[in-house]
Image 1 (cartoon, rainbow, N blue to C red):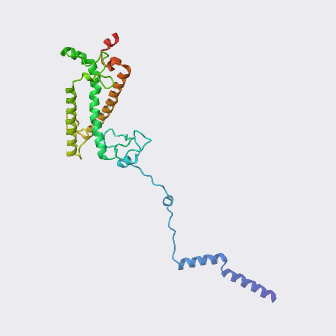
Image 2: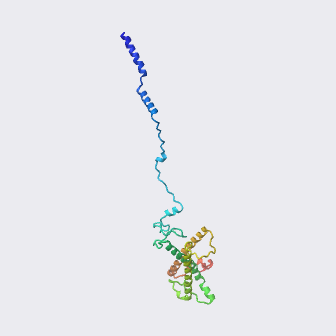
Image 3: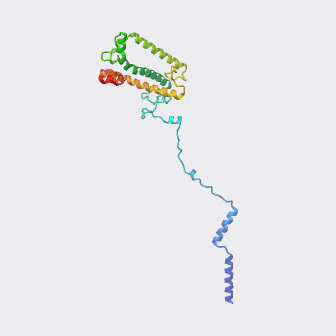
Length: 261
């Protein structure tokens, strides 16, 4: 009897444990219950590209690139003067003493530079030519040569300026004054479109803007070189006591004549 009761009790316990939920089943049922009662929450995808901070890169072009160049092109260790914007031909930011403090000052100095450049180009050509042809022309016209015995051009350092007629100096000063007055009047009457040194002469002058800029750049570069050349002529003849054409005859006389000297 007792054995039968024990066997019956064990059978009931086994069958009842089959219907009892285990811990894992309880957790699964709890999760299922929560999913049915609460709305599902989905995580937003993480944008890895947006989460990484990238430092922006600024690329300058056009006028912005010109604004970035704050150092002088001719003197890289100095800052470019504010008035020298690079718009004028041959402007490389050279003004170490700061003469051009405004646009008006810059235009006045460019006007003077262009005039001196043109005069220097004439002088650089006329100086050696006068040493070559002065005595020949004077002999043909029955006049006294202006060159000295050493074939040097009259100058402040060489002397000989007393041989020049005062009428010549008066005429030179008068022509220079007329040109200067004409340039000032033209600059004031057309100050917006006026280019320093522009007297309205258009013979051989390009009609397109690109060609005009090239011509202006060529003129100012050759003029600056001519100013240096004339200064060098004067110093050279003063030091060597010899004419420029006599020191460099290959440039001014035929080769055969030069070799026989």
